[in-house]
Every structure is written in C-alpha cells, then in structure tokens.
Image 1 (cartoon, rainbow, N blue to C red):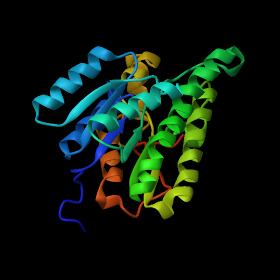
Image 2: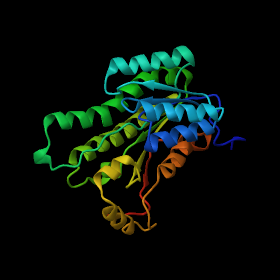
Image 3: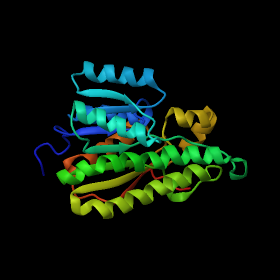
Image 4: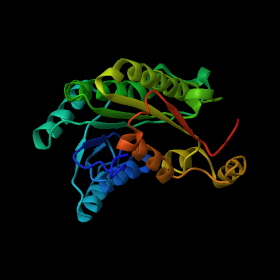
Length: 253
C-alpha cells in the first residue's frame, strides 16, 4: 500500500459539470487530496467561479473552464487550454448530466437528443480526448457518474435511464479495452442524492417519504458520492476496474 493511499499529488483532474452538487464536491475532494483540479462548467459561471475562489483561497491549484461537453470543438479547446497551462489530464470524472422526468409518449426528439448529448455523448467526447495522453503515459483513471436508474430503469425517466445505462456500458467496455494500458475505468450508480436536480423534481413531503424507504433513513449527500469517487481516483483503488458501484443506502425498488 502506498504511503499516501488517497493522495492525488502530481495529477491533473478534470471534473465535468463541477460547479454544483456532486461535481463540486468531487472537485473539493480532489483538490484537497493534492490534484491540480479543473472545474468544468457550461452555464453556471457564478457558481464555478465561487468554487474556484474557495479552492484557491485554501491553497489548492485549480482552474475553471467553460465548455459545452456535448460539442467536440469545445471539448478539444478545453483540453488544449489545460495542456497549455498545466499538462495532460490523467484523472477524468465524467459527472455532467441533466435529468428528464416525463412519459416517453410526451418526450420530444429534441429532449431525447439533449439528454443523450449531455449524459452520454459528453462522456464519450471527454474520454476520447483524454485517452491518447493516458495511453502514452500508461496511466489514467476515469470515473463516470451514472445512476441507479441506469441499472434498474425508472418509470417516467426512460430517457434518462437509457442514457445512464449507456454510460455504464461505456464504462465496462472501456475498462476491458484500456486495462492493458494501465487505465482503470469505473462507474458510480447513486440512488437519490440531495442536489438541485432532485429538489426540482420532488417537493419536501416526497423527499421525506423517499428517505423513509431507504434503509439508512436518509438520502445521499454529494459528499457521500465524492468520497467514493476520490477512492476510485486514488492509488488505493489501483486494482479496481470495470466496476459499477451502487451508492443507494441499501435502497431496493
């Protein structure tokens, strides 16, 4: 076991959708562990800049980069900026995502495409951009933030579940493809997490009822997810590859 099994010193970590929620907590954890941390955001600039200010005030090395991760040119420009200023990304957390709670018969083609572009295509584009340098160094870690719905499916969330299911399949496939190059790829499948996304979908009474159905008696927090993500990025998880880790508090639906 390394002397500092959870240290990320000497690594560059990019977290997509890192201005709020799970992504912001992953950024805080990675920065505290010593990684040079890149906060990707698209529309939430004030939140991203506040997080950047907080991390730099703590003495962490961080930058914030705006990019729509569903557009290849913006992804390429983001990676080019990181490489020009710091070097190549060797820790990648594909966290950016949007939800859609709607009957399939009421879902438009435009909505389908938006969910797929951000939740699945974005991870493809960022992984594809990061991999050449990882392969050259024969080291890399990719953690994809999926969802328990990607494993189980969900009524009125078929499109979201399909995108997250695709992300899980992508994770397992890349793990098999890249393991011989020293790159580990894993996915996290959280259950309900206390984020702005969930708050927009459920009222307080629904949140209370949902928490009561979880054996641990509460919803997950972003920090719960970030701590496991940090583990997967760290030297302590060097032999974990191709896994989908459920983080649902024992919830069975």
